[in-house]
Amino acid sequence: MKNNFHFIKLQVLLSIVGIFGITTLVAQTRITEGSITPEMLAAFRAETANQPSVKAIRNAVTSGNVGQLVQNNENKGKIDDFFTYKVKVDGISDQKSSGRCWLFASLNAMRGLAIEKHKMKNFFFSQSYSFFFDQLEKSNLFLQEIIQTGNLPLSDRKVEWLLKNPAADGGVWSSFVNIVEKYGVVPSSVMPDSKQAENTRSINNVLTTLLRSDALKLRAMISSGSKQADIRKAKTDMLGEVYRILSVSLGEPPQQFTWRYEDKDGKVSELATYTPQSFFKEFIEVDLHDYVQLMDDPSREYYKVYEIEYDRNTYEGANWKYLNIPVNEMKPAAIASIKAGEAMYYSCDVGKQLDRENGILDLANYDTESLFGVTLSMTKKERIQTFESSSSHGMTLCGVDLDAEGKPVKWLVENSWGKTGHDGFLIMTDRWFDAYMFRLIVHKKYVDPQILKLLEQPAVLLPAWDPMFAPVE
Image 1 (cartoon, rainbow, N blue to C red):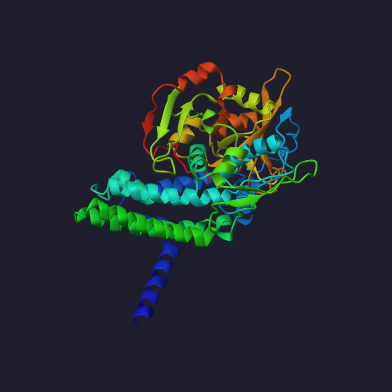
Image 2: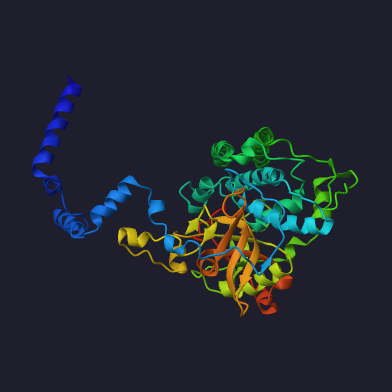
């Protein structure tokens, strides 16, 4: 009877709405300054009705795909795939459904150097091996910081941020350096991707829940006055559980392995025994600290060095520290590196104006404004300040097309989405590059000495929740 009564009440309410209209119901509620009023609704309806094309647009939008409807067909075919200078790249990688793009971008940049140095036919580093220790180290960093903030309330912003970000799968170049210098590297054939490495959401969810639970246990121990030795032992036991989850999900990382390769002439090298550390020394033969981290963030003062707190993966490792300069002042170094045959780690806001099918990034790919009759213009600075744009994806910058005056027209990046886009690559026009490019890692030998000198200044420490902090996927 009770359910029937509520059903009858609902029918009566719907009848009232049908007879008197929605504005009658709005008028019966308490309207205050800042509320939507019946008069405003009436004006909205009248304004929309006065637009002669609204009905046709509504028919198209309600029955179609907005992403397809806003495609700017006038821009198709205007961007070719020829480049003045292009780093030779062998093979395409695929991060699958994971946020490991930063590892792919970093290792792919080093892969080209290794292939060239040893004249290998083809070669890939194992992202899974590096990811294993990235996750273990991030878990340790989280638990250690939970201990160090154990006397702060849960509402403290730093504690809150830690609990929101226990151990994500994103990262940056400096995190890559932290991991490979400590644990070395191995070939992909020695530790290939497991299903969990290719689809990291499940393992991320498990680790996130476990670490948050562990955080509460550690905080309870601190609150009750437990001895430091007991707290450290509890943390070590917790890390043992993390290690077991990673080993089950990704495989056990090798401590030693035998390996050989085929060169470009078809000759097979001698079978040799390596540790991950000795393999790193032999096949990544550059000093990773010779690479400069540059950033274009117009929301911050240029020509300053900045450091993001907690933007690292090892407790003892380096945070992401970068020199902030205008994008045009980065381009000469990028061009010089490409001319010399050296690809670079690069990151951008890849989802903006991306023609995924053709692998083209250009500001005129889509015209949302014309479809809905609105203006969506914001500067790069404004997009950063409002969280509309951030560095969302890492790739390997490997090509540039120059005009007759030597100025860049477009750029080429090796992606890690398999054969999608332009056969595994993305083409960026220079105007898109200016608008959505953020990070560039380039060897210091290609950088203007005056810019290098700026890196000597002390860094301004920014909090982990700064608008430009966004773990790269």
